[in-house]
Length: 57
Image (cartoon, rainbow, N blue to C red; front, top):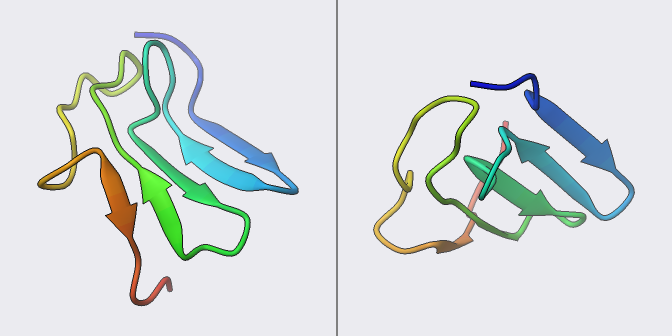
């Protein structure tokens, strides 16, 4: 594990780190990616690495 819990920039919001983000959303929160992440030890959180979001709360 590592300490890459969250990254917030003008053009993205990402959780986790290492080889991939566990979840990464682009700046408009409409699209993103998910992959295996060293920080949380998760696998991809969706059916495919590329994601389109309907709602973000």
